Image (cartoon, rainbow, N blue to C red):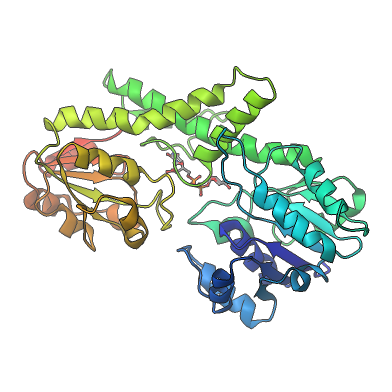
Length: 432
Ligand code: UDX
């Protein structure tokens, strides 16, 4: 493979991981961000979020000289064979992706573009965005360039691993030349490269995330029906998962999906469907069900414990999922205010996210360093995120330090209901 000069625009989650991984493969990478403080800290190898393996990757690739960071577009772009746009796309008021940062980056990069450069959009954007970006760039340069779309499928918590070993690379291109260059670039990561037109590549990203969000919503609905008839959703998953068309992977029921992608991508595809005249989209309903999920389950828990007023609740897990300090659309952000509004006292813990969540929650929450301290003296324990630390708690120890009614709400179905009951706790999982 010929090593390439690559500019990575945007040093958010996807930008930093992608820059590190392509630098590790031997390419010359310049990471660019307009945020000077961010760039200064990345130059020191300081990552502004917790992601396993990322800090080491950045230190290693900066030390080898393959990765540098700058705020200067002329430094980043002038010698780049490939420019990857990985800036944020927040949701706008109507639910569609707001492309202002993508367009601003396009304007800024255009005057410095090298003849023949390939501009890749990696941010999640609606189909049709490439044409708009092409027009913006063409308005500011006379050099020939190509547009491509290579969506990112990494998951937080396993981002480095996912990027180094993807299931597939989806590459949307308009020419054989761009296809050959990008296949070559991705070859060390995977031989499973799927080539298509850019619009299809962009739809792949929306389709994948919306399918997964729908799958989670589906199993949550089945779980709720199981609650009505004595079935155990974990047994149901085992039973139907044997059907090769279905499978049992990526299918744990819970409090609904959160994080920075699924809630936003479902709202965006619903808004996109509406905007193009497909108003009977199922994604509106998926979004609605997910929004209502936590209040629905909390009402059920409230009944079980005889009202949360005056009760102490231990919360285990504050991030949106394990192995990240990301708190965007985390269940704790809905659950904890709900409990406090009803008069509960909340003692919370998390291995990584306490400092990130503090300013987002009421001041009355008490934070402690470990699960047993949180649980001690609590009437109710709620497992919100299945961090490894919370997967093998000593149930007898829990039972002896908790106070009546000693409820254990396992919203991740991590524990065997019988073992929890035998230890002297009242168990309630999801759909069982
Ligand atoms: C997701 C996609 O998986 C990834 O491909 C895309 O690039 C970005 O969005 P991420 O948000 O990091 O990644 O996390 P993921 O592990 O997919 O979980 C998303 C949400 O769904 C979390 O709230 C998680 O708890 C929930 N989830 C996931 C479930 O409730 N049940 C499941 O079976 C899986």
